[in-house]
Length: 132
Length: 132
Image 1 (spheres, one colour):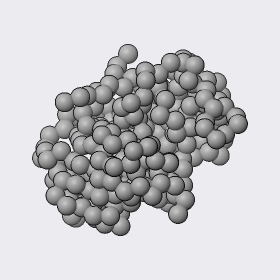
Image 2: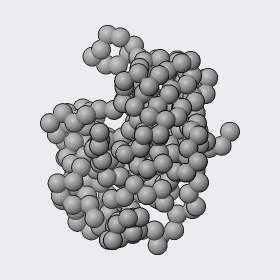
Image 3: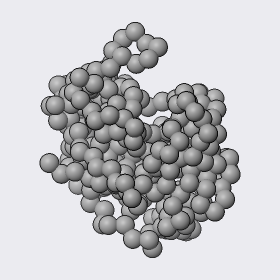
Image 4: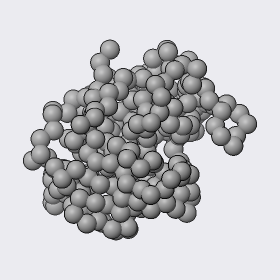
């Protein structure tokens, strides 16, 4: 079967020692350091924007099928992995919606970080609300 | 530099002949066909759910740096790629928020499709709203 290979566009920099809570609760600040060859691509990201950051759970062990159903921490009921935000997934892709605080050169200062220091960033997209 | 390789968990099935509009406007219906080895992972996805589908823009040509700034169709001003939903991105990763209509065995019927028929699916996540 076809596979798809991606190369990071940058990485997360944060001083948080423990993994912060899910982005929707996190107040952790940090930086998205974008590699200089992609810097032009962030020119329209502005303080106050919400951005969708797609990254790799690079510290997750290889996926095994017993993880298709998992009991989330602080919950009683096991759930299918595609209904969870767990970092143990068939493809270890993470998604966080972050608040932009400042942009300078190739660095985006953000709030709501819930990734480890050094996490490889695969993509950044504008946050789009639903239009019902 | 490190690269990350992902294997599809399934693919999009739709009869739409032309690429539908962005998911936030699309009314196109279709199916997410999940490969049987991952079927257990979708057991908690229910009609009425909104799901985040992460996929590969598998028909996009290789990225070139002149695409770091692009003029979106129907807009006058060119923008940095990380502020756009364009399929031409350094990593051709797409994200759509779809409405679940029905789940049967390994098939999720959805609305708001904005991908081509045959698009490889990399991940499905629950849609989380902001908790301010």
